[in-house]
Amino acid sequence: MQAEYRQRRDRLMEKIGQGTAIFRSAPMAVMHNDVEYNFRQDSDFFYLTGFNEPSAVAVLAPHHEEHKFVLFVRPKEWEKEVWNGYRVGVDAAKERFGADEVYPIAELNEKLPQYLEKADIIYYHLGRDEAFDRTILKHWQRQLKAYPKRGTGPRALEDPAFILHPLRSLKSSAELQLMRKAIAISVEAHQRARELARPGIYEYEIQAEMEYIFRQQSVMGPAYPSIVASGPNACILHYVENNRQLQDGDLLLIDAGCCYEYYNADITRTFPVNRKFTMQQRVIYEIVLEAQRQAIEQVKPGKTYNDMHETAVRVLVEGLLEIGLLVGEIEELIKEKKYKPFYMHGTGHWLGLDVHDGGFYKQGEGEEDWLTFQPGQIITVEPGLYISSETKPAEEQPEIDPQWRGIGVRIEDDVLVTDSGREVLTAAVPKVAEEGIR
Image 1 (tube, rainbow, N blue to C red):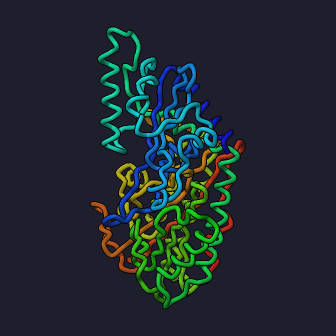
Image 2: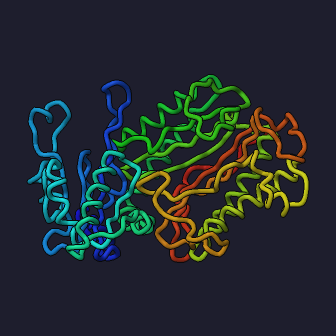
């Protein structure tokens, strides 16, 4: 993989030219008191380096004569490693990660200026680490102060995401291989959940079975907190308590995926616990399924995220009109977003190193400024309808018939944009409503 990381750095350095890009590793997060969560590296940092330790900084300085890729890392310290795990250390980091130079992290303030003084821009993302933000701003201020006499140095600070994230959104063959593995593990877990689900067991039992499969085949486990939402809980978008007992007649919405070597899957399926839809459940399910089918057809080169989203919205609104949950002219209902009480989120997001991955959907304020899908991108397609006991109809819309209350449905697939169209990477998880009606 080192060749892969080097290619990524080279692509970024080509674009930043005379700039210097600085990336900070993720901080350690505290679970409670002095107990920390398992460390998870910052995705931008990992994408460029593959280095998986905290308290590190990566500097890319393409204009520097000798050191274009520099790492600052924790040195080897036996007294600390015996408590918290082995460190790569300064010497090994240079060999293993292909850096031109590696320094102890304690030397950052001393060494960093030499990589800034000939740069025209500092590329750094503010807002993730306030203490480190102050460090970078202090260095920039010193460079600005020296500029009148020296005539060189960074006159601006910009976020590297605007350059890096479009690169991240285009998956290489190596990345696709890792994502296919994450998806294959997730498919197995969803199939196991479907076998296990029945009235009487608890949501957390299904969660445990799925996450056992995630952990059994990937040290990183779940890509995000698993949602196992039965009955009315399916109407809560980010429900994670997972403590309700499944009841006869429930729908079960499962939104769960595996993380494999930092790459993520994201799959949602909804099905009846007793294998039989009620008439009302099936009607809602078929509306969502058709919305997803038509939205997936919009995922291809030349189309945009908005094409996909608007297609899903139109099908959902048509369905809500047909069953009387909305009334009026379809164009006006869509324009005024009267569907929002039942469908309050977007139709998908980029997927990769992050579950909501780096990348842009639009570049400008106009309707013509949506960016088109490109081969190599992976996007989720996940329309839904949610009619909880708390759902209030939009203004000038009819009261909600109680027969629809408590029904929540979402269907989500991970879709790769190809040269000729698309590939539904998660197609192996069943979603056609073949179950009977009771």
